[in-house]
Image (cartoon, rainbow, N blue to C red):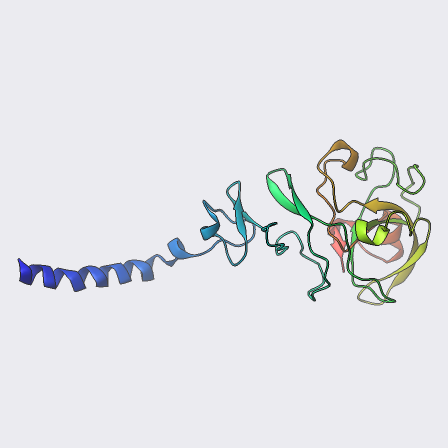
Length: 211
């Protein structure tokens, strides 16, 4: 029996090695929004929320929901998180520092009554027609209405440029309710423009967002 056991031990070890080689997916980590049972199933610093790998608000990662954020460390970290439709989103009170040329993501918003902007604009309590070149800014850039009615210049990567008036906040702290048309909190580097802004830049609103 001792001889048989000593023979079987290396055989079992070899079989285990073969199983690992044949089925590596059983050991693979899930990426953003991949399936998971615990945080051990997720890549890097992601955590498991409702069976999906998402950013971990406890350590301030924004790998999944912060796509499009500047890659450099701008010192603006999430201040919390919010669960929306089964996904955990980071919330912010700050935005990257502004300069004469600030990286941002342009998204599209319907500022008219009944549009995806939710309630009326924060600056004037009014709705705006989609033919107006108006924008909403992430909470940090909006800065307690400091930029209300200011004109900003928006330039695409291919050099096309236009101006637009700041009329609203793209709320980075709250969301997922009727006031925000059920949408998740804004990322911290968003310029949410009307269709007129997109048209002036020669962009297709179906793209959803551009740098």
